[in-house]
Structure formats: structure tokens, C-alpha cells
Image 1: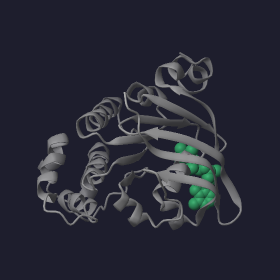
Image 2: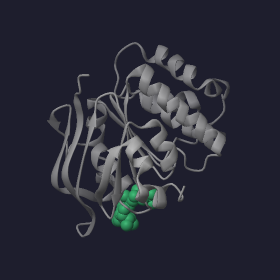
Image 3: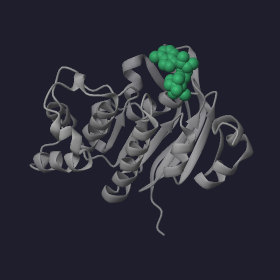
Length: 245
Ligand code: ATP
């Protein structure tokens, strides 16, 4: 099968406020059309890595001080976040970050802020196709349940028609049943819309069940990588990330 490189992170280093070194020489690659898992303990630097790619680090006094991030063949580090969205990368932040005092529909329209084509309306229906419950919720987004907010955050990302979605802990705060549902939809979005997904997760079991390949981060670096099947079978991964089973 043809394999096209979509995202390449080469040996990056990230500092916050000019001093704290959080990512130290991290490299990873994401092929077009895949779901890639980025695993690791709390504080390993996973969220920081996603923000380095999406440009959102800038809003937190963070900076990529070394290395290179290439997307679709072009260098993107240092570029403003809204321009990175225009290039086709959309980050679904940890904790969802939907706008509580706007409706679902308004939140979805916000996701399309970079678009000027006339298909925004039909894409809203496409999002409702994946998340039928969102269509029924006409009140403010702040009153949605945690699961619905996660769905809205993913739907809002889809409205940007991204090539790559960076997803930070979609399972966070959700019941096991909802986690299953959300991951099922993530898989369908990947297959049906061809959206490539880089997935950060504490729930390694769930992440490896949908990903084709995975990276394990510790202290700002990749310490292990391999196919999802190989990682799920790896003794260290089993012990530290899959609860010893
Ligand atoms: P978690 O699952 O807890 O989010 P993570 O692997 O995503 O963990 P990061 O959130 O990237 O880890 O954090 C990595 C390190 O960077 C942590 O030590 C954290 O305290 C530090 N850090 C994160 N954000 C900032 C910031 N804005 N300023 C300074 N240090 C930060």
C-alpha cells in the first residue's frame, strides 16, 4: 500500500517560560490515513507535544527551541495556531474547551471559522449524523453532559475539515460505556472521512484497540514505539500501562 507521510516531528525540544525543558528530543511520524497513539504517564509531555504541533504552545509561553515539525512536506513550527488550522490540523483539547455560553450549533459553526465555502451547512448535518444527540440539544453547551461535550468538541473539529486531528484524552471523565462509544466514532471518522488522527490517551488499552501504531513517552522522549499489536503485547507496556494484564 502507498504510504504517504503526513506529519513528521524531528527531534524537537520544548521549553516553557524560557526555562523548563518539557520535551527533550522527541521524534515521531504519522502516515496519512492512520490512527496513531501517543501514550505515557501523567506529565510525560504528551499534551505539550500536541500543542507544539498545533501552535497552541505559544498561548502558554511555550516554545519549540530545537528540531522541526513538518506537515504535508512543509515546516510548520513557529506558525500561528490559526494558520495551522488553515493548513489542516485541528486540536481537540483536553477537557474539551467548548464554549459554555453558546449553543451546540454555534460551537459547531465556530469550528468552521477558517472556511469560506458554502458547504458548512451540509457539514453540520454530517456532524449530526455522527452525533445525533447533539441535534436534540438546543440549549447552551455548558449544560451538556461530559460525554456530549466531548462529542461536541470532536464535531467542532470536523467542521474545520481537517486532514489531521490531534486528540487529547478523549476518554477523560467519561464512563466506560461512553468511552467505547466515543472511540467507536473516532474509528468511523478515520475510516469514513479519511481523517488522520494522533491520539493522546491515558487509557492505553482503548487507544491501542483503535490505533495502528503507537509511541510511548517518558520524560519528554519516546522510549518505545511499535505497531499497536506489538505494544499491546509488550511486557513493559502491559505492566505500566495496561494494569499488569
Ligand atoms: P497529562 O496527562 O498530565 O496532561 P502530559 O504527558 O500531557 O500529562 P504535559 O501536560 O505535556 O504532560 O506536561 C509535561 C510537563 O510540562 C509537566 O511537568 C507540566 O507540569 C509541564 N507544563 C505543562 N504546561 C506547562 C506550562 N504552561 N508552563 C510550565 N510548565 C508546564
